[in-house]
Image (cartoon, rainbow, N blue to C red; front, top):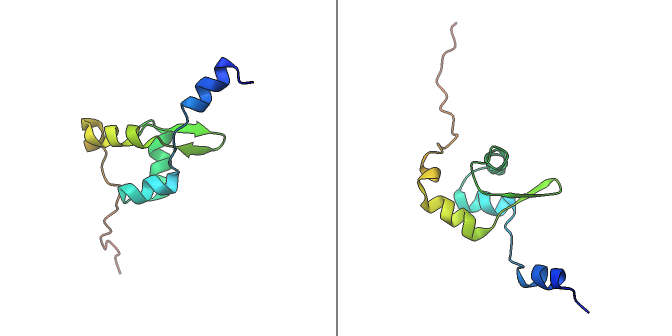
Length: 83
């Protein structure tokens, strides 16, 4: 016998994406995805010690102006060594 709570929970199950899956989708490192999640830059859920993402929320974030504000964290190295 299911209770109303368990019926609600089971009826709202949806696939959640892992950090690795989101990183691959966005073309960035998994560490960057974790940092964005920790800083609440990208919509995420923390389950235990792991971040999970709802695909529709990530897509909505990508379509919003919020995603445009995030810069790609690539580092350009220049030679500044002096001999």
